[in-house]
Image 1 (cartoon, rainbow, N blue to C red):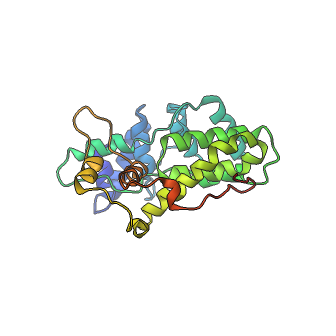
Image 2 (cartoon, rainbow, N blue to C red):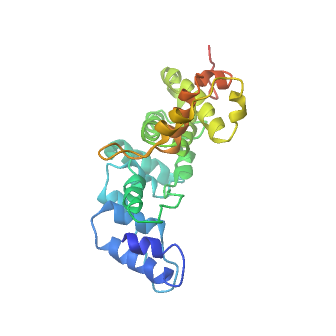
Image 3 (cartoon, helix red, strand yellow):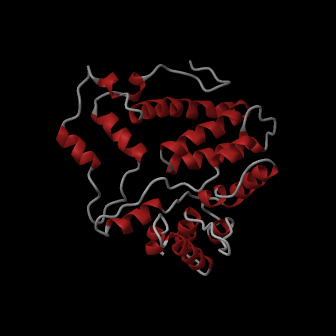
Length: 254
């Protein structure tokens, strides 16, 4: 399956590799094969792609399996109901696939690695959100995305929660600091490091240690969010020094 995934990215065998990958995923109960196939759909006549819902059937407790389904309109409310009932964690299989590719000389997992229809789901949680029952469900999805995601997932978490906060005022104290943290990290990722030029900078050794690949037996490689936070911490600055305090829409910051 990994070989077909690589071949499917381009070249004369791309179409055949995509068809084989779809066939492998269709007859497998391994969610990772389903994810690989969702990333490489076939387009040639006669080739049958797996159903997007296959992932949520195989792994109903995985948030990203449900977010792979289109989430606009009434289907968005259905997804919120299913997520509230079943979901316990998020897992994209990017790190697992990357670890396998790392063992192959000259090969690396290419970005992007996203099959989730995150923006479709935001329509069901967008302000004004008059449905009091939907508000805690939107916030629960946002919590999962914030806890286990990178910068993109955390940004979507903030979008999801903005419509719910007016109905959950007690949660504002949790999400307002997260928005400020998001601003700090995205500014760093956006190459605005000149703001730190007058402050102590981390040494080369500190940066290398923070960003080094994991040793055998250690956890998987850092995502871009974790890398940015480590570098911010090594700079000696608090994230709150990088931007002014701001409120989420509909909320005030003391």
